[in-house]
Length: 282
Image 1: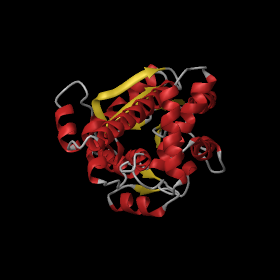
Image 2: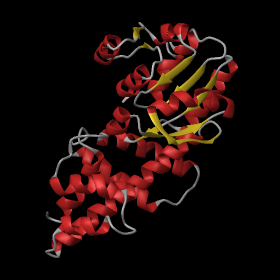
Image 3: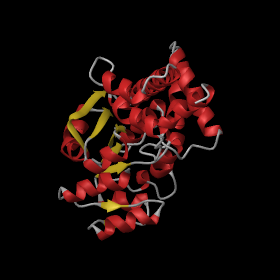
């Protein structure tokens, strides 16, 4: 998702210095006008507003704290904006480390998938200092829907909000799959059921977009199940840490892990419905 987010910043006229472990996104962005960097440290030498978008907590730690990491060459006054989805505790620790080096760090995970990244309509959930948020809000408004760029609270709050987002999506995905199964078992057209539900209180983006995926069996990924499983593992650990009763999320987590165990981690996260379809004999 980092490539289309970066492209939108370029289109808006912001100069970029870019680095990635994978050469193809960098090649594409350089062809569009960005400057190539050989390491995160080189990015830090050339920019004071630094976005990161990588899969998990260890990846963010490597980019910031590893050899030739951002922290090794960061300029005073830099604002880091991590749009990855990582553990809230990791976000808090890295923000404290950044502050000790004269910088500020925002955790700013996003929701909206590849489509939202390409169209610049992502929802962005931000944790960190108000001053840092205000300073980079014009950048966030380019990659996200300005009405959906929200500062949630202090460091870690953005990541906590993203976990809440993933819990709500998972519960809704499961309920939509169960409803379609019930309709099919009763001999009723599930497409008609979905159409009717979209006109009432049951309407949701999950029912609209992922319900269609479930009807057609098209699980080409917008957001891969393997990444969703990672998010749910972080959510489960945080739920346990805060002693939160979350039985629905626990079931959703097991459904997604079952999907991963079946070798379907590269499919869209909505493919968790297939686990229930299989159990129903459909």
